[in-house]
Amino acid sequence: MYAIVEIAGQQFKVEKDQQIFVHRLDSKEGEKVIFDNVLLIETGGKVKVGAPNVSGAKVTAKVLEHLKGDKVIVFKKKRRKGYRVKNGHRQYLTKIEIQKIDEKATVKKAVEKKEAKPKAKKATAKKTTAKKTTTKKTAAKKTIKKAE
Image 1 (cartoon, one colour):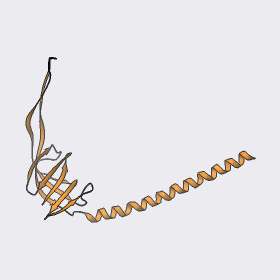
Image 2: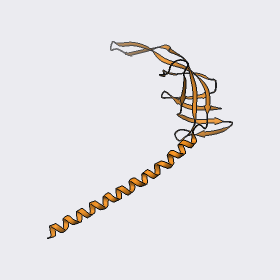
Image 3: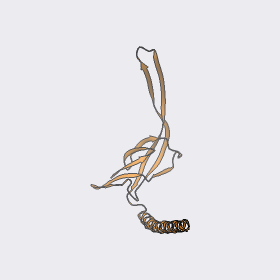
Image 4: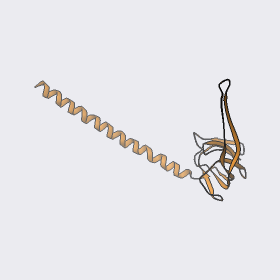
């Protein structure tokens, strides 16, 4: 079983008990982190692809440590111009361990939210039609006054 999850702006293919390095997270060492942005889940040969996310799926991970990555040298040069710039940096990383991949977490809540939204849309549609009819009546009264 594996999943493709978006963590800190990047997509990762994760499995249970896998350790990965991601961009620095704001949680402390030893805390559990839940990622709801699951794009794909594969279980026993069955693949669920989200549009854009798989509804009700989540991935739970534990923060192991915060560290810095290897040094990266950035060297820019333009030939025959005397232009040379050397910069470098070390990326801040977080090491996490994937503990659990849930395929169905809270499907009932998502269904209730979807039913509530269409009712609100119908009410707003009625209000807009009422406003249009009132503007037409006022326009008709103005034309009658001009004719007299």
